Image (cartoon, rainbow, N blue to C red):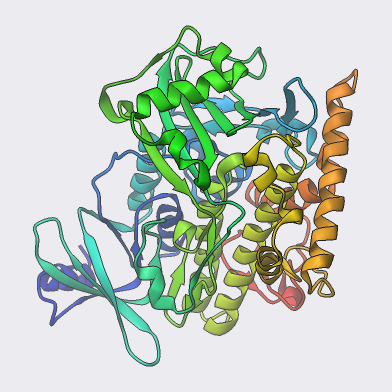
Length: 510
């Protein structure tokens, strides 16, 4: 044990003589574990404080290729995931839009994800998250479970550390050059960066979900795909976690909360009965009633974003910063991607390569852009589904929404997601959304009626190309390293990543 570790151990129980780290991370989920591994691998002192003991239950089981083959390859955990036996996901299958039959997209059609990276995983999060957390520990991060963080320590200049209670009930302090809140959607520390949490009226929904054994599978080679099915009251997810275990959830608008109140078992059965395709897939299945998957759960899938993601000495990553509707499996992607962005910024500051203000500005601009392009994609995705008799789908027509919601959307994405700084009013943004949604719906219609199943129009549509752009860039950097094509700044005047993906550099140095 090194001298600093000995000193930290000796001072561990004494708040008046706190431990000192380069980075203190609150939360050991995918965002915190990714960040911890990437910073610790540079030789920095990292402490991860996790409130629970792993393995623990978590929702959000469907991943994207950029997480598996991009971020997780950069952290070094990709081989562990490959050995875990998770279900391979080659794309997604949807009963959505004007087409009455389900349609499928495959990751392999994208020129950036073809070949060996044309898949992701469906994962049991209790297993996936523990793999990431243990890997962060092997990379050199100190992981402490059962530790509840009460507050940050700050002065007028910056955040300096945290106060927490350890697994034995002792009150402790840990100081750090940086504190990162990765504690998820139930975070309370996010308030300490300033700003406010802004909720989307458009995406305020409720999900009722459980797990089933023996559900039907899609035909090969798509048996591992997520199946998303729109019906009058909302939409279902159907995620094959193993050859026999399936995660099944119904999403309804918050004004329809009576559909999931009372007897939840009866409520879920009633929702399944409303949706013929899901009824068919569950005809011979039984709901799991024991173990971590034994209870029915309700989650508020309220999309939100914090108006600021950082302040001197502190960053928000993952759901602590923002959350967007789960229909396109973006949750773990945004969490791990934000962990990567934060790691680049912190590594660069600690190495003296970039000024802290510049590094945090790059982190926030990139993370906000990635969130906003998924947000805009999902608006177009919902807009394309037509069911004029359904309250749920009438309410999901954002371009018909009250002006205040469109103005909030302009504040979020105007000049960020599209780079079109002229789009500064709600009417212009609504018109662009209509055009993007019509283009996307047309591409889906071509896919559904194509004899050869060509998906190129889908991946070339504006909203899809935007949402895959940065993820594919991370994949190329992870796979090719210094052999990848030189990167250009994602945003005007911004930085570029180093060849190994671990730091920010001025564009002229990329």
